[in-house]
Image (cartoon, rainbow, N blue to C red; front, side, top):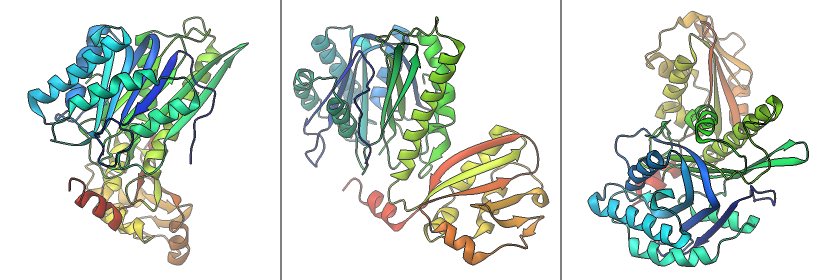
Length: 407
């Protein structure tokens, strides 16, 4: 299992406590605090039904222009579809945190994850905040406690770290996320759930930070799916404390490039961790769509396949039923010439020239599909568009988890 290393970004402290929201009695209130207000960039769910903390988060990020002093996350309750009481609870949480951490209320960033439609017991959060504040620390154990407290149906800790050297100085990145089901993110600019928190000590302005976050998210969290369901609470938040001696404006092209690559790698690792921990998943499948007319069309085809129950159930038993792949691509809405399409599974040919590949070996293909991870490559034979999309199979265990989630 992943664990947090000591090379954490400077300027942040983390804590977690048991507020009594999770039925399990495990830690369910996580807090991250910047020593001084951090520069922030955020991407929220595009679902038109959004939770109260999303509404408040959008408002506050707009008001501050991208500045956050404290992050308050509760797990076990989504605070969504809870009406005015839910909004009042989110505001009350931010007000209390602002008083404790001595910052403006709009510099507090709220997040929630859990069941939809159940009133949030805000009094438990308010009681837990002072305890969390007293336990704040900058050790790996503190960051790991934060990462564990945000989990719901997750079975694995999801963390990643990166570092960029600039002469005698270093810039560090720490990322953590939660998510195992209700994963079909559609994240856009400020506008079971996926919550992602990224921390760095780089000194950088909000506009530049937003410019880095968008592309990193598009090819990571916006290119994964467990079940295709876009949550009401999905959030990716990137905070920069500026506590390192490295400033983006003064950094060399090489340092900027290295930081961009490290941020992408951290996002990619976290996105992979979400799919690898997909509810009931036994196989992680990479869909590599190439030679499409555009990147957008390639992603549309990938999503159509990734969200197909027939494809996903075939993957659960390692069934090389390539006809289901073609059918899902065919109803994606993207036009293509079937005779130009070529499909391989982990390099083994299964379809080409409009028919089953002459070299198709069902037993060999079944064998590679029994592995935990494999790649399905589809060459559309049309252009330069491409997409790598990460998904998983659909199993009986997924049905059990989600059939009984609220009871």
